[in-house]
Length: 371
Length: 156
Image (tube, rainbow over all chains, first blue to last red):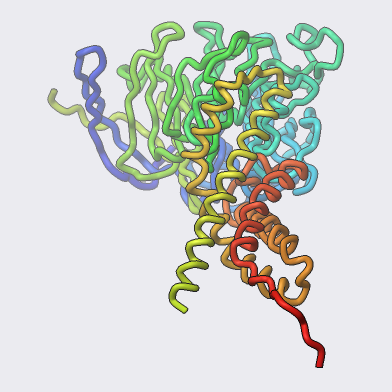
C-alpha cells in the first residue's frame, strides 16, 4: 500500500525501569477526508474498511486508494451526538464466509439502542444483512453506546456497551443490557455457558456488568484474557481485566466525579466490585486499543497501545502479567484526537484521527538514530 | 437611592447563597438516595462528608446557574407581585423554582451531556431541587416586601 504523504519523523525516548531506549518512527497518511472515522478493519487483500460515525462504511483498496463511494447496504444508523456507526470487525472466518460485523446506534432520539449486525461484504455492497443483537431496554438521548467488538476463540464474540449517560444505575441491574458487556454467538444466539444464563430475571447475554462506557476491548490469545477500557466521568477512566460474571462497580464505585463537580459515589472500592488495573484521573478519554504484537517495533511488543481523545495522544501501557508497570505518551506532536489504534497485518501501527476531516495514519519505523 | 440599591444587591447575593446551598444539599441527598436504591450503605458520617464536599465542588457551577436564573426570575416575580399582591410570596417561590428549571433546560441543551445535573434526571428530583432554590427566591421576596400600611383608611 502506497502512502500519500509523509508527515514527520520523530524519536521517542523511553525510560522504563532505568533503561533508556529510543524508538524512531515516521507517520504516513494512508487516507484523509474521512468524517469522524471510528473503526478500522484490515481485509486479507491488503485493503481496509473504515467506518465513519455519520453512518458510512468506506473502503480503502489494496493500492491504498480511498474509494469515493461509500459501501452500499449498511444498516441505517441513528446519527446524533455520540450516536452513529461505530465498529467494523471481520469475522475470524472471513476468508471463507466474507462476513463482517457492524455496531451502531439504532432507533430514534426518544428510543434508541446499540445494535449489532452481521453482513456479507463485497465491494458492490453488503448483502444478507442480519441484525443479531439490540440492547434492551431502549433509552433516550444520544450518549454512551460502547460499540466495540472482540472475538473469543470459542466462536463467540463480546460486544461492549455504555450506560446511556442518564441511565447509570442500569449498569448495576442484570435486567438491563445498559452498562454491560455482552457475549453472543456469531449468529446472535446466546451461549449456554454465559455467566447470567442460568435463568431468573437476568438477561442471558450479559457477560459483565457495572460499566460506564466501554470504548475498547481486546482478547489476548497468548494469555487467554480480555482487557477493556472505559470512560469515567470527570476522572476515573479505567483499564479493566474482564472476567465473566464480574461487576466493575459503576456507579457504586468510581475514581471520578460528575462533570458539574458533584459526587457520584463516595466510594472507590466496595466488596464484590472489581478494581481497575489502571485508572486515569484526570481523564484521558481512551478510545481504541490494540495489544501490539507486530514485528516493526520490537520495543513496543506486548504493550497495550491506547488511543485517547481528550489527552490527544496514544498511551503505551507496559504490563507484567496483569500489573501495569509503566506508561508512555506517544504522538503528542500531532495534537490530534485519536479515535482508534490498530496493529496492521504488516506490523505497523494504524491510527484514526477524530475530526470532521479525519485521517488514517500509519506509523512505521524511521531511520535509526544514534543512542 | 444608593442605599436602596445596595440593600437589594445584598439581599440578592444572600438569596443566591441560600438557594445554592439548599439546592446543592438537595441534589447530594438525591444522588445518595439513588446509590442506596442499589444497595449501597451510606452512613451519616459519609453523608455529611459528601454533602460538605459537594458544597465545595458543586456550588461554583450551580451558584452561577442560580444567579443567572434569579437575575431574570426575581424582577419578574417583583412585577407580578404588584399585580397579584396576596400571592407575592408564592410568586417569588415559584420564580426561583421555574428559573432553575429553565436554567437546567438551557444547560442540557447547550452542554454536550444529556443532563448536566444528575439529580434532575427525573421529575421528583427536579421538583425537590427547584423547591430548594425556590426557598432562596422566596427569601428575597420576604427581604424586599413593601412595608405594610398602617392607620385608618379614609374613604373619599
